[in-house]
Each structure stands twice: as structure tokens, then as C-alpha cells.
Image (cartoon, rainbow, N blue to C red):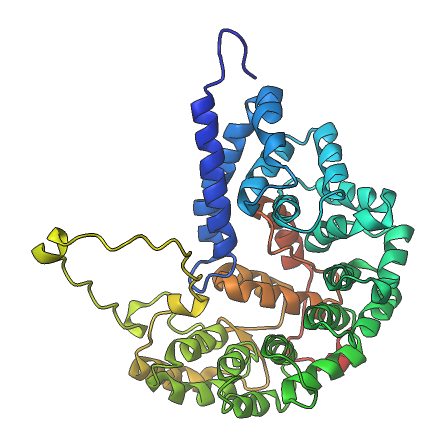
Length: 457
């Protein structure tokens, strides 16, 4: 806390906010990275982000009232700047500030400001926040409940009360598809009967986002209807946009039942589904998928994706340079280029690069030799992730640390499915919130990753 003898350096405070804004943006991007892994994220970007958030928090009420609360304005247009200010306000766990924020978020219209508050509160490492969010969602009027349940859906950590349960049960009548999607996602934290009533009703929604959230929740709670829906979408029996087909194919791969590898390989022959099918093959955990992926390593158009899928199953090449082609060196800048006039400034933002653009190109021969040596030692009856047989909760937790960030949420989803929702890892939160949950999950006991969906208990 500052005083007259130790005045606040507002230039330093402004720099903390600017850096926290920038690092929040980088952190969000890293959640979908094809190369970042969780330990590196926690030790790097996240560590620096938290340090700048703490730098904002030490200014106490003076900084909060002059800089942080004004940053959370309804007309704010920077999601991550709002998130940085919100994170600083809750960093010391002051109940009054948390209550003020939770009351405010329900009044915000959909847009950058609300998204920023939801982002920060979902990510917050403070464990007590989860129960406070559920409690706040229980107290507010219906029109203010959606953003609070969006936060609660991402954090878990408590049980919905009767008013939240009733709101989710009425989800099909909500006019805004964003609210229906929130209800479908938050329903994963309901008791099984309530969750299935919400999820199975919303499978028939007209919005693909709602359908994806509904079958994600349904699968966690063992819905045969949701699984059948996912299979039908994955196989093309039900028409659906590519984004929904991708999620459905991934869901079918995570269950890994007989025939899924052949189905996905067949779907990879369709140009519009090729990348999505290759992505899904990497979650089947089946060694016959590796044999189908290896020939793709010589096709530069899909080689990097196919290699990512092979690594996801076998672990081959995860940390060995010999499996990967070196990036070509950049051409040196010439004197003529240095002397030339600068091109006119492009005011249009560059489109975000797809995660696939980060992937290195594989050396096909190395993968083939390594698999030839490894294949006789692998039991085809089991499913694998990162070269580990999926037989225990600790293996899933190990894989969450070893795999890349964009694969991580899929592994966490399978862990939730195979534990019928008992093991929930909030992958879009800071590491400090996840660590005790991961430690508890690691000790949960045997999990048979090859068990058919109908026999998951």
C-alpha cells in the first residue's frame, strides 16, 4: 500500500497494465498452441502475467479506483485489457471487490467488456472464487445469470443450486444461442439426470455451438443419445458444418471404439474434412491409426498434421530433433532492401495464424524406422496417448503435462468422460488452480481407456 512518503509511480502502474494486457493476449493464444506445453506456459508467459497483475494489485484502492475499475467500462473494446484489470482486482481475494465484480458482470451486454471479465474470472487461480460465482449466479435474476454460469462452467468446483438448475433446464426456451450454449456447457456440473435432460434436449438445437456443448456434456454423463449423435455427425449421417463434424470426430476418437480408425481414415479422403479427420485420428489411441498416418508424412500438405497425430499416440519424436526437418534459414537483408522506401502502412490487422502453421515438418524415414522398432512391443488391445497405455488416471494427468496445449483440452475431456465427470480439469485457468486438481486426479485410480462407451462406469 502506498502512502505520502511512498507515492505511487503511475508511469510504472500504466506499464504493468499494458504488459498484463499484452501477456493475457499471448496467454489466450498459447491455449491453442500446437507447440507450447503446460509446464512451459506456467513457467513463462503465465509467470510474467501474474507478476504484472501483482504489480497492479499492490497499489491497493488508489490504483483500483483510478485505473482498474474504469478499465472495466461497458464500452471497453479490449478483451484482454479488461481481463488484466479484472485479474488485478481479484488477486488479493478481497470479498467486497469480488462481489462488486460478480454483480457488475451480470449487467454487461455481450461484448468485449463482458468477455474480458469472464476470461479473467475463469482463469483466476483463487480456488474460493468458484463457490462465490455459483452462489452469485443463484442470487441474480435470470437475465444476469448467463455470464456467471459461463465462468462457473469453465471452473467447476461447486454444485449448481435450484435456481441455476431451473435456468439450465429451461435452456431450450432461451432466445439467445449464446445463452443456450452456456447452459449446455454449465450443465456438465449438474447431477446426471438433470444434465442429461438439458444436454439431450439441446442436441436438436439449430445452432452448431449449442449442439457441440450439448453432446460434450452428454458424453461426460454417459448419454447414449449424445454418443449416437456424435457418431452420426462424425460419419456424415447427419448434415453439420465442418466445425461441428471436427468436434464429433474427435469425440468418437476419444472413445476409441472398434471401427473408428477406418471411419476417420475414410473421412480424410474428403477434401473439406481431411485436416479434421487427421486431427481426430491422433486421439484414437489405436496403433492401427499409426500405420495409416505414416504414408501421409511424405505429403507436405498434411505431413505436419499427420506427424502431430502420430506423436499424440506414440510419443515418438516429442523431444528429439532427428524426427524433424530444420527450418530453412532466413535470407539476409540486402543493402538495396535497406535503402528502399518503406511500403505504405497496412491498417488492416493480419489474420491470426492457424495453430497448424507452428507445426514442424517431419522426417518420414525416421518416423518409419522408429515405429518399425516400437511396433512389436505395443499391445494392440490397449489405447495409447503420448506413448503411454491409458490404464490409470495418473497416465492421463502425465499426458496433460506432456502434450501440447491445443491437444490438452481434448485429453481433459476424455478424462472427464471416463470418470463420468468426477475428474474435471479447468484447462482454461491458471496453473495454480489446476495443480491441486491434477494431483487429486493422478491418485484417482485405474481407468481403462479402451473400455467401450456403454461400459464406462
